[in-house]
Length: 610
Ligand code: GTP
Ligand code: MG
Image (tube, rainbow, N blue to C red; front, side):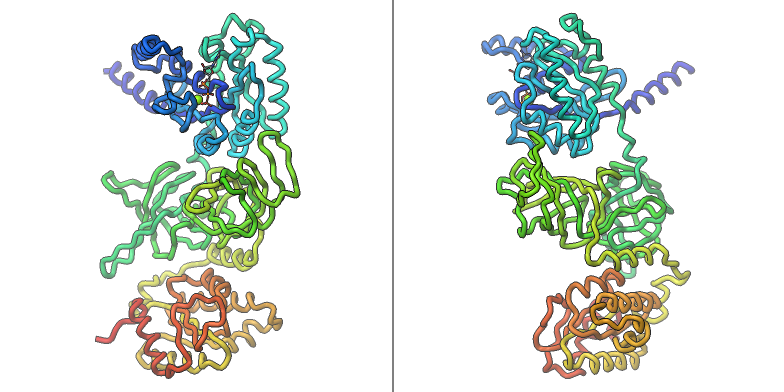
């Protein structure tokens, strides 16, 4: 009985064996694949007889055997003798299971190296003892540091080709240490090895008696696990919002993959950039038993206590944890892989998490040649394989963390013509035009005390949903008469409705700001009033002169965009406003009123008469 329990415990421990992702990088042909092949052979990870049969096959074809063949699964890769894609290989030591990503060393495949490295927790960097430090030895080192991988061991390989000479080893150690020092990386170890002969890979070699350090396997086992992703603050980029379509069921499921941290039923979550908050009511799981929480790495879907308007691209965060940054201006480090250089004025797309926004370079602060660390401050574009520090202007504010805080949610890729052309990390969020207003709204949402009476109860009482009708256009186009008529019409039909003329705000709430330059502050206050009145369940009508898209965006920050109906009155739309409805000057007030009511009925704000 006891024995049985012990076996179970052992099984349990085995199940929980640690996993670690390692990337192997370095200049082309310096022996990365060979070292991995050796690791596989020396840790007895290979199926029995595999090594022998491969050696036999090589002999039959009068082809010299290569350890790299063990992992070179791709056919054309064997033909060309270079690693084309990043291959994933598994092996284990008594301490943990390793997933080792074999990245190609050729410059053309830098993108594969970066993709492979973006999942790694530590790296082995291979340098050919005979060739010495080459440009991709440095470039790869730099990329690793940019991706936040700071645990690096350097293998000085092919020691057999230099007669295991300590001086050759020491010179490479000195040269590469200086480089790593400049990019602020302290390597865990420098190890003289021969991938071909297996020296110092799994056991210390008597050909390098002068070497007193650890073997490659020991160094790997000494790498520390990164702070578990689930211990970091909770971040889940919203991938989709599923709505139930059944009548009366307005539940929505927020779906996404948890990047870091964990979340449980009952937790209050805030969605950024909007700052909307609600409590997690349930997790929806398909084909599995019900779950009560979700943590890093898991795809999850949850419903909320109260229906709030959230869209793809927002990031869910736990209320009591550190909040992400929200802005449309960032300082970032970018590495460029596109064939054409990255230039100012051109519009690109930036993707981080599930958010995709347009992006333009505002300023190239400095460009660094990652192969020699030479930086130039007056370059105005980023050439292929260059790394640059720059300031980017985004089409819309996004939520992110800086690389210092949570590297997972600081990473982004740049897309041009549907293709990934670069990537990088966000170093800092900078203030943009709407920063002040946004900060105020985020704080207001954070502090907002919800009424006991729910939105649904109010809607039932008033027989309507709350909505904001914004009527805008040039001067003297009949905005105000229309607004008054609409108010009266809806009121006579028993609706809870109010028309708020801008004048009633200007001389009251806005009495302390007279300057017409303070337009955005006027708009912000108007939107704040609208936000309060909409919370009461009211249909609010406001008029304002010649609103622009930026004004509307500002209002949308305060008021749920789903609840806004924007109407332009006048023959020609003279601003960049993308309105929901255009009423030309020829329509009578009565006709216009009916058209607006039609839209309100269609969107379910008011019900169609029986
Ligand atoms: P890419 O994937 O193309 O970047 O190359 P790689 O770094 O994976 O190099 P690979 O392991 O394919 O080795 C390149 C060549 O160097 C092969 O011919 C190997 O046999 C040889 N080689 C690798 N390690 C050693 C070594 O320790 N000693 C000697 N003499 N040759 C080696
Ligand atoms: Mg290779």
